[in-house]
Image (cartoon, rainbow, N blue to C red; front, side):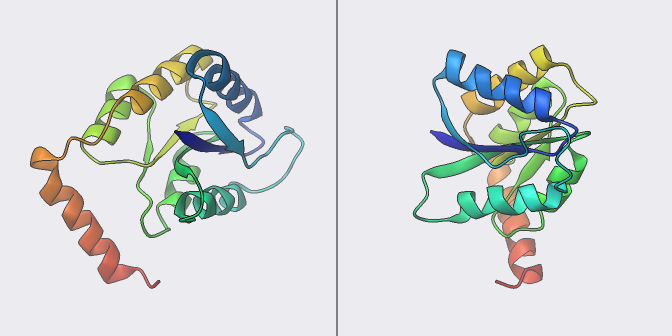
Length: 154
């Protein structure tokens, strides 16, 4: 599995901790789309655009992303503007589990001002370790896809 990770200037420290964790503990490859410095004023929608472009690129090995801002909300709102992206804000392990199992979320967002580093690592673990199970969730996810098809152009 290869991920894309990104953050805005509010979340550089947490993103760096997650990157280190992915390498040292999980041996997972990733592409970092920024930012790398807390003084970088790049707005999070621009980070999301870069991350989503990699996820949606059929030639890319990237299928999932982890995006972090102050609350995780802005990243999720922006990511969900793109067809085929199902981003979930998760600040607890249960939400991370359900995001993947029931909702087939392909992007995890978190807030650096909301959760501590160790909890973020646990959330990442749970999200990565689970797979979409379908079952009773299939009709719901299919409806999400239908609504997306009706309302998105391209």
